[in-house]
Image 1 (cartoon, rainbow, N blue to C red):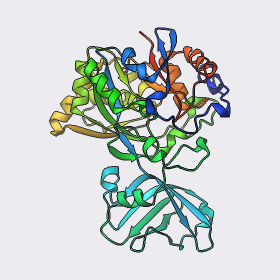
Image 2 (tube, rainbow, N blue to C red):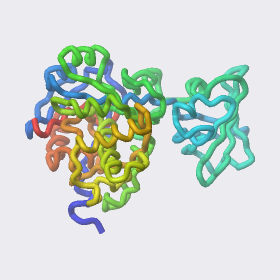
Image 3 (cartoon, helix red, strand yellow):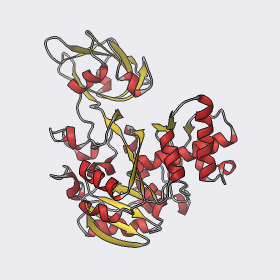
Image 4 (tube, one colour):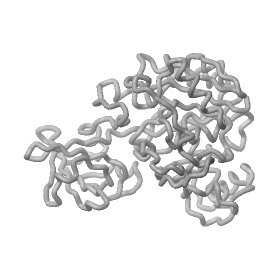
Length: 400
């Protein structure tokens, strides 16, 4: 039974269907922006963001790139089988290497109509007269699918040619041409996400350039957003939720910039925030055990033996590890679960869209601003904000 403090019911709110943004606006920066600053709420447009971000702020952007992860195969009977790529297995478990695979690869997938796909039935998808991709179910329990094709093409080019944009399920529509560009940030670089870091969708190259001119420092981290981000919490006690695992990439510059920050550190989106906070906890674990693997578990932030390590100490532990291993980049995984009661270690502000009721992301926002999250969401609903991935956004600065 959930206690009052961990009851999911507290984080429900009514979201009318018509408030869910089904399409992007004509221009990225046409969106509304709700500013929450030291307890006060004001309503702006995203174009005014230049006046809202402190001059000495450090923004962290998630440069992951969404892949066309939805592949549709048809059986000879006409039945459609949807194969949704979620995690590379062979020949590499790293996205960048897996997407360079030639001739054959195996991925963990979500499969629609799985019951109609018999183990000995090889599905095929013809891309053109010369190229055909075949799919074979190699492990029904694990949903592992082996893809094979002739020729010298990398798997990424196959996916780009055959795949479809993995729009969030709550949009309840098929992809349209505009989604190929608009469900991608202008600063996306590294393929591997199956959902966009949506707070970044509002930024344009021009706004990023103007922020830089103003003195706002910018840095990039990578978290490959997984389909688990849409997984609903089913337990009345949210602490029992089985948190999804996502892959992150950070580098030496990230750590040096955190240590040198003179103003607020503001991640653009919950994914960038999860990356930064995970980085801190990895440093804490390293400070206790220098051989610790870069994997931040769901409950690490709540373990008493990992408390009371300063941010500087944590970052320096990571730098020491990088020096010893003679590397400038670290690849790890995180299933960090941020909910009310969490003490933020790196982030002082947050850009974020408006999220699904009783979701892990609403819990994260509630952890960041406390019970004020209810006032923020009520204000957004009362002022006709558009919600979810293609919706409007907010800038949260709890301490001003």
